[in-house]
Length: 403
Image (cartoon, rainbow, N blue to C red; front, side, top):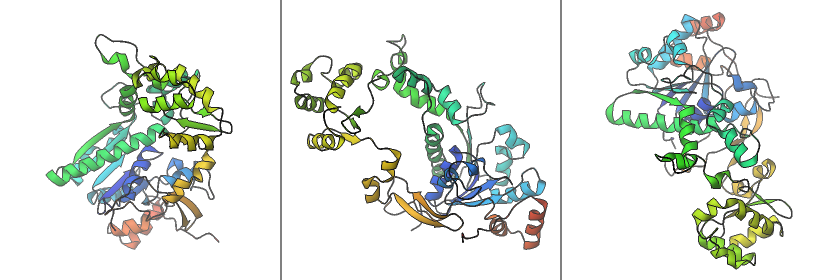
């Protein structure tokens, strides 16, 4: 069945993580995503584990359902080919600075002369009206800018980054709904538009939505910071053989846990009498809970708490997450025979569609794997394509099967 975005062509001029993640999601939804790469390829092609050069695991997990077209945009013939492509596109998604796009003749005003109804989305580190506009942005830098290391220090005593590129991946999801909303508007009005998406502002709103706290008000009613989230005792509880996550969130869940622990009086203790009080006294609550959870194994606690309708989950490692039985039940992983990389493990998203399902239709491409195919679609005869290859304006790689 066709995906929800079948018939939509996206020209993807992004690199690294945010943009490629967003365009892969739209490719899963059925969009024809054309990844424009420089002759040297996307910088993330070498990131992570790999079987062959240029096809690292990180790259392969954020670039499926795309076709790769190499264009050297420093050459007029490369820019001319891109211009032809943009005339056929519904979306141009880039993460280059506006000044660089303008030097290439690819500012919004330039592109709309080629295609007035295009959705033109630029993803940047910082809003272009602010003093940080020209600064480079990577996940660690934006984590620092939005105070994530500071929050870790307040809760654990140590500054560090999240061990996943959280900012890139979360802003990628916002990029998807920005682009799809703009496509919906165009469907109704016929109007294209320019979208500017900022990592810093997007994540500042997300972090401060939880932690603005007393600074929300004028005058402030207290300091910034949501106490429950910042408690040092808001962490998995050690058991006899591992760790467990348990949430005694409602009053009834807390009372049931207190009865199980043999301390029913804590169910009406003013420090824990309702959810607000428990959040303000998370340090003490965590100590009480930790003293109880260390008495049994993880499996025992999962059975007991599930039977008492208290939310609970064993803490996975990366290895046990890969083998998680629920992921097997829902068919989360699938083994795919990549024509040049052999058998690879692929993952599906968390959404199910009754009529327009997201699908895996293309493996992550080699750099320039679809250059000749796409140039033919744009009307280039074979002799001109050979000339573009000879000049270095494009590059063709033939996907060869592993022996």
